[in-house]
Every structure is written in C-alpha cells, then in structure tokens.
View: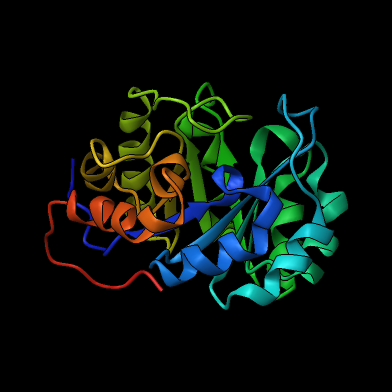
Length: 233
C-alpha cells in the first residue's frame, strides 16, 4: 500500500457528544484541536437510528468556524440538500445506496458552492464509484455498518480503502478520502497508510468528557507514523 502524503485531518463526530449541551460540546472540541466537525444525520429508515435535522445544525453553526461535514444517512437525500446547505454545511455527503440519481444530486451540491461527498457501506464494492469520480470532492468509506456509534472497525475495509486511493491516483482526481467507524489510536496509522485523508472519530475523541478532549486528539495524532506531509485543505 502507498503511504499517504497528506497530513490527515481529524473530524470529530458529534454523534458521541452530549446532546444536552451540543453547542458547548462543538465549541470545546473545536478548541481541543479537532480539524472538522462531522455531523451524522440519520432518518431511522436508511439506518436504524434517528439523530438530528437541519434546525439543530443551524443552531450549532455559531459555535465554531470549523468545517461542517454533514453526512446524510437518509433515504432520498436530494430532498434535503437545500435545508442542510442553508443550515451551514460546508460538505454534504450522500450515500450511493440511498440515492437513485447520485450524479445529479452531487452536481447540485457543487452548484451551491460547497463540497460534494459520496459514501459507501461495507458491503458495497468500490467498483460502484467508477462513474462517480468526476462529480465528487470526497469519498467516505464506512468502516462499520452505519447507524450507531462505538462500533469496531471491519478491517476488511482497509483493502477497499487502498483500492479506492489507487483508483483516485490512476484517474488523476482531486478527491479527499474519508473513513468513519471505529477509528482509534490503534488503527489510525493503518488507515492513513491505506489512504485516508480525513478520519472521523467519535468515541475516541469524546471519551471521558471535556477534560480529556485535548489529550484524546493528541493521542490520535501521535499514533500516526509520519512521512512527507502537506495539508489537504
């Protein structure tokens, strides 16, 4: 596997935050050093859980200037793009499995002046991305079956991750590669080596409360075996 030449970004998943004080949690995790705020939106249909909608995203937007990475784990995501854009999303990622016309939706997201992402579940092969590459800025590889936080990484997905990275290089595309699911200090370096530019971390960042946020993020960063680096954005 080729070593990633980028400095990996940590996207703190607020799915693991205290929802009773969500705005404060976003502010605290920003100050602790998270690069990106990852927001999981679930509808109870595409995945077996329900989280938040655009009104909540809008309400926490004022607590940070960090990138809002909105991951739509919902059916028919095209119906909600405008709402999440207006709420303050900087990246909107849709699931390939949930959208009948993904190219059209990705093009529309880009037309709003923000980044368009596409995500695939563990059982979905990377070959399904072949005709999507011209229309997305980010690919999110799910390392677990989506719907709940705190799951263990399905390690077979590292090969898929590596294959997608090779596909991106082969086609000479400027696409960020993101991973989500069970990211921790033990697998962080392996995921970066396999090609991850952005690593979504929930439990491993929010574990033990505010007093540990800085330490938790540093632990992730320090677990990475560094090579030549440059910023992703």
